[in-house]
Amino acid sequence: MLKNIQAIIFDLDGTLIDSMWVWDEIDIEFLSARGLTLPPTYQKEIEGMSFTETAIYTKQLFQFPESVEELKTIWNQMALEKYTKEVPLKPGAEAFFKYCKSKKIPMGIATSNSRELVDAVANTHHLKDYIEVIVTSCEVAKGKPAPDVYLEVAKRLRVQPEHCLVFEDVPMGILAGKNAGMKVCAVKDACSEDQREEKRKYADYYISSYQEVLTNSYEVLEHE
Image 1: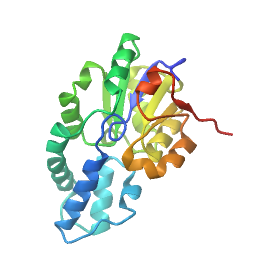
Image 2 (image 1 turned 90 degrees about the vertical axis):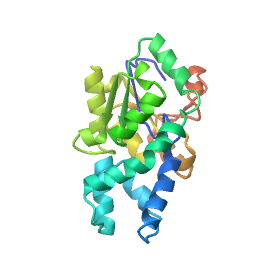
Image 3 (image 1 turned 90 degrees about the horizontal axis):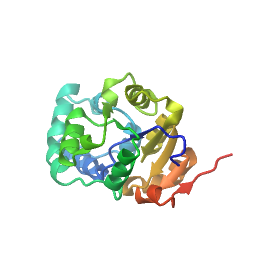
Image 4 (image 1 turned 120 degrees about the vertical axis):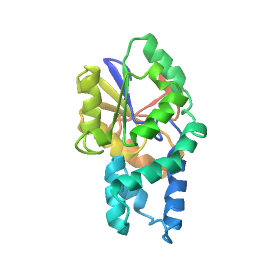
């Protein structure tokens, strides 16, 4: 998997950290407080959107009086403590960081989350000991599945897209990496288990744990 790879780029939520459950809780709590129920297609509709794009979509969908920036502030406040105290790294992630660092393979993060929450996670888990570049989708023109955020991370790492390996947990993110011309490894996550076959359809590899990369026990996905 790492042959000819000169940089590693990770998505954050559901890929590096076990955090997607946080948003399930927040979406229900946020809407319930306004007398609304979570539409069954909501999570699928916002998949891959930047934090700002999600706020715009949600405001338009429910006709909320709050501004886009106010919605983002509310969500950040609701999520901050959980991200700081309750969200762990995925199994094997730290060992994989250390391996890549020992091999002088630069690493970056390309995330749809907010800068505030990314920084909270980075501080809690000391990610900046390993990660050289962090870019949020709010900093580029379009969120996933557009390739913008992955291309920006590659640019800042000074590595050509074809020499980058992406780790992602959802189909829209996997497509973003592929649209950027990069190899993509799908990562198992409980919150996207119902999308497993779709993930396998788009990705080049599939892992349940980062330890599988280190032991060469990952699944190679061959497509016609």
